[in-house]
View 1 (tube, helix red, strand yellow):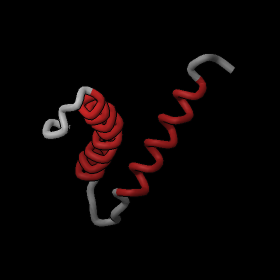
View 2 (tube, rainbow, N blue to C red; view 1 turned 120 degrees about the vertical axis):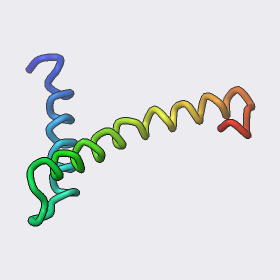
View 3 (spheres, helix red, strand yellow; view 1 turned 180 degrees about the vertical axis):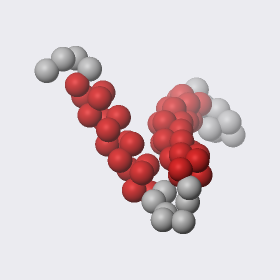
Length: 65
């Protein structure tokens, strides 16, 4: 087990989640890929947005948060 094992495992879970979320038999490969990228990128941005909002709350900037 290396130090990157948890990162690789979480990456696999995220890819499987995106694949199951956008699964549609009528989509071609390119459309499926676009949808998967949208799901993955939104799941990566949400934690950063939460942290950013908490920083604004901590700085007593309620309107910005």
